[in-house]
Length: 350
Length: 168
Image (cartoon, rainbow over all chains, first blue to last red):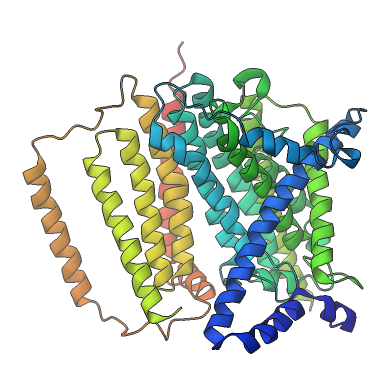
């Protein structure tokens, strides 16, 4: 779909222009490559921190409107500077370490949690040819890297030397390991149709029809499992306020606590972006530039996740496990089976 | 990646892997040992990336440090009740362990020496996943299915053990 207007405003064109500019000032092309790589990494980290700041505000506003309240409206116009005020508060808080905590594990846990959350951004196709690393294992890289987020939760829970934190850490493991399996199987349907794990191939395969139309069941399973993977309500048993204070984060304060939040919102954005790429056609769309489509669709997905969070009650632990293993997993397997049969049938009649 | 950068990356990853592996044995705290084992797995997966075996690297991350290490850490945390400070003491078996490890090293090194290696990774396949998938589901079908059945049996066994016998 090479429409001229989209091409001109695309991220790839911007990168090409930047390259030409840099070529005039820098001695050799290796330097230019390095600067472009650094710009890419900088852009990704800017996106993560900005999205966290914006999403905290949006989440508070969405929850307020769902509960017929107004939400933050005092700091700045319509309360838009509320998150800035929150950040200043968090930075000026005292850093408290609990007695008897395992010092190094306790300090490392929030930092280690943030690494996989940021690393998955390397494979998101933000626009045509705008992808930091178009790996041949693409979506599998996402699954492998995001599975690394389980251990830091357990570390935080154990190192805090607190019963609430430990129970929260245990729940994280049970929940994240259980819901990883339906998540992977829901993605498998899409991979079967594409025949490739590469993110750019998955987007290219949706030029005619978005996969949400072909794989509606997989999409529903993906949304539910991704909610559980990012530990958001209704699956927030890890940090359920009414039972566990705050789960693994109970003993953290100030910026250490803020890192957990940064990782959570980075994960929320990541889950939405993966959902957009796999099921909603990625950056493809008419008239508007690709990156704008990508952002609009991601915003829609994020709204769906927030909508789920503020309208569903939290299940019990055993209900959560039973739902994951007895409902979601069989449904995901049936979806894979149906996809296989459908593909063979289409091949037979062609 | 340039030659020197990948050499540097290799030594960095090798150091991480070896140091954390030594830490697994030497740490007095069993939980620290288990967590260092996860770091060791991650280092090995980095080495796979340098060999351009991205698929194996991702599998290593997902299975070993994403699942096996987590279960190990969880098991260690749940079984130890008293103080963790000295939960991984040294014992008098180090000589026997040295002997067995030495024999294992000899076996591995002789296999390495006997394997006809490709001289460079420049000719490595750009997209190896279809090749791996085809090999797994055709030539190595029996081994693949046997492993699957074995894992299923282990899982059923674990569930039966965890549920226990129903009291009359």
